[in-house]
Length: 126
Image 1 (cartoon, rainbow, N blue to C red):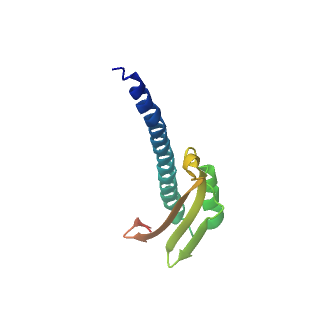
Image 2 (cartoon, one colour):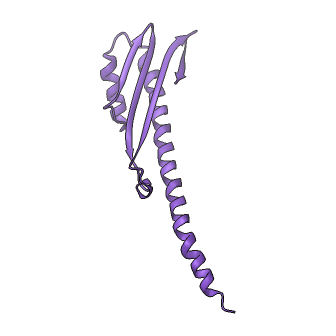
Image 3 (cartoon, rainbow, N blue to C red):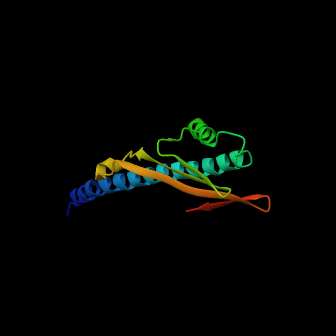
């Protein structure tokens, strides 16, 4: 018996599944990379501005530092209460391959609060 046709059908069915799985992996990696960048940048910004929070324009300084790191500041919210500095930021990323299955955008967001205790800056991520 000739089974070459069965193998061809098998690969024709599986190749789109492999491509979709690869696309999902690429999109997930891209999203994780942006999320890690946002967390790291936020921590660095807080460490940089927390000690001098009383002597600078906090909102402008934080916004400038985000923009230097190519992070959107459209939804940036900064709050300073009781020596606790809270930063909230979120923005959308265009999906690379998720559009195949109907996902056009992913949301990257952070809500981090920092305060000083015993001379160290303590971070709380919500």
